[in-house]
Image 1 (cartoon, rainbow, N blue to C red):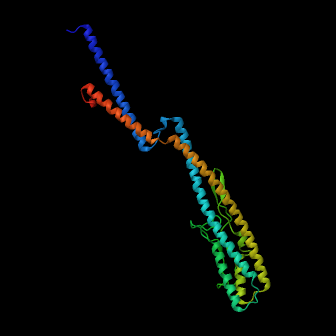
Image 2: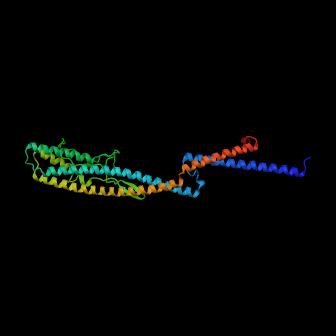
Image 3: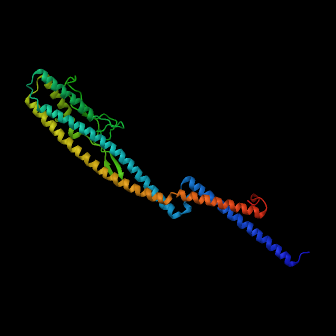
Length: 317
């Protein structure tokens, strides 16, 4: 029969062995958990898998992510506004060229030319009339009428040409409105993205541009144009050009403002993205090295434990 001392010594060995097994298993399980976490971090390239991993940094990351999303949206708005302004500038430049050509033709014509010369000038004026009307009714790349205010799906200017066969002189009808469209290009900062041609076209007034151009072309073709007609036409087109150039100047000013804002937004967005990246992105190279080291350590621990316990590790797991 074992002595009391022997029993105590046996019990102590059992407790010691149990403590060893428990501690070793706990260490192995901890290492397995860390390897699983590292594997997930490497797979997602993310430093923090959940907000609880670092509450303070998670809150900061959410704030930065929100700012990045907002600035990205402003950047998209700016790009859309830029395309619209550039398109409008192109149309306004063409309209400027067309009106300049009309003024040159009218100023160089007296009405005393022979019939063939008058017919040629009349045809050129009629072509320019058609071009100007087409530009005033221009549709942008999104299919919206550029100069119709809020009525972007409505043809803004309608005029029937006597030169082209209308029975009598017609006034121009404007079907758009005076709505000004704006785009938010920064927080609380809105940029106008459209214009109307009211001061240029003067639809339905005594200075109706399309009606006046049609009348001078028709009178020149028919040989009924007078010196007074040419003087009036020159004054009217000069006034239209002056008003058009005021619009062009406004559009150019808005483009400068937009360009400045784009530069600022790009810089701020880059700063936010860098801060967010530094806060949340994983150092993949370091993480992979750590993962490999932990895998080696785990394998060694498992082998040692298996040999020490003289049985499969999995009986304990």
